[in-house]
Each structure stands twice: as structure tokens, then as C-alpha cells.
Length: 196
Ligand code: ADP
Ligand code: MG
Image (tube, rainbow, N blue to C red; front, side, top):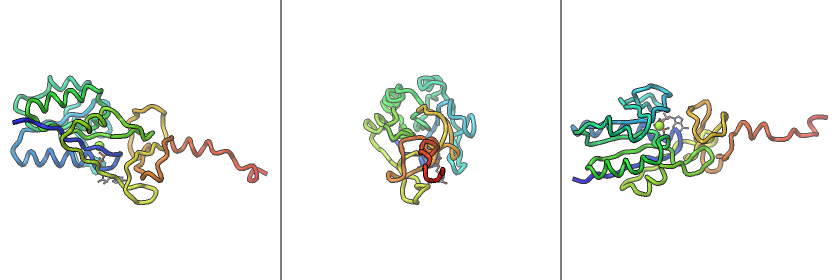
């Protein structure tokens, strides 16, 4: 039987990890052999678990590099999950193709955009080649509407900086700004009238 690729893409807090955990758990109910992997640099909650912001957890193997998956893959694994796919290198795309070609169901969860609102590879490419794509949405912390963007509140200007509620919020298109919010506010010139 041939395998396939599923992508769960969206902003932070959109429920990507929850959805990944749900799909893996349901596979286990179906008595399928599963394995979940995550990039080693995501150690926010636990070294060997994938955890949602709701503290839902499953066992996961941390990988230094995506191609290390071949060292950890069990011969009988049927369903394979990757969380935080955007933190793997672009080689994730070929690894997913190879796994699907071997007959595995491959599920990848990850951010589709970075905090500047730019496509965050390799997720956009995976979305193009996947058989199935879901784009769950979070709730905008400013207005309560559905949110597709991740607002960076503070921190460094690099594309990758691990963080949670302290540094990032979910925002809708209207309330998202492709800048670090605290720095935007501090750049606003003081009103000379108020200074008098
Ligand atoms: P993701 O992996 O997409 O970052 P998770 O699956 O880890 O998301 O977490 C989703 C959970 O985050 C929700 O069920 C909810 O409890 C919580 N949450 C916190 N902030 C928000 C928000 N702004 N919008 C939606 N859910 C939120
Ligand atoms: Mg997640």
C-alpha cells in the first residue's frame, strides 16, 4: 500500500500539536504502529515528549538533524508524526517523500509563516506536495476573531527564537504587525505637546 503526507499548518496556538496528538492517538486505537519526532531545539516543555499548550502530551524522539530519523525509525512503523516541522532543515521534504514512498502515513505539524508573516520553509513546500493539508486557526488576542498570524511581542530579530506566551501571540490579519510589537511601540516619537 502506498503512503501519503498530511500537513497541519498554522500560527502558534492554532492547535497544530493537539491535532497531531489526536491523529497519532487515533492511529494507536486502530492498532497501527506509530512514532513521533521533534527537532531537538524545541525543548520548551519536555525533552522526549511533544506537548500542546493545553499540556496534552505524547512520547516523541528529539532529532538533532532530520536525517537522523533513519537511525530511529522502527521497521514496523506505519504512522509517523513530526512536530515543529519548520525547525527542521529543508531535507524534511525529501525525508517525507521517502517515508511516504515506503508506505507510511506521514503527518507534519508546523508553522506556515514566521513572525514577519513570511512563508516559513519547509512547511509551505510540504503543503504543496502533501495529499492533505489542514490549516487550523487560533483566536486573535486583540479582537477574538480567528487568527492566522503569530505576533512577536519581544525578543530578537532572528527567524527562530523558541518561546511561548511571553514572546508570541496569535493575531488576525487586521491586528498582526510584521514587526516586534514592543519595539514598534518604543519607536513611536514622543508627542512634543505632551512634553511641554
Ligand atoms: P500549536 O501547536 O498550534 O501552537 P497547541 O496545539 O499546542 O497549538 O495548543 C492549542 C491550545 O492553545 C488551545 O487548545 C488553547 O487551549 C491554547 N491557546 C492559548 N492561546 C490561544 C489562542 N490565542 N487561540 C487559541 N488557542 C489558544
Ligand atoms: Mg505546537
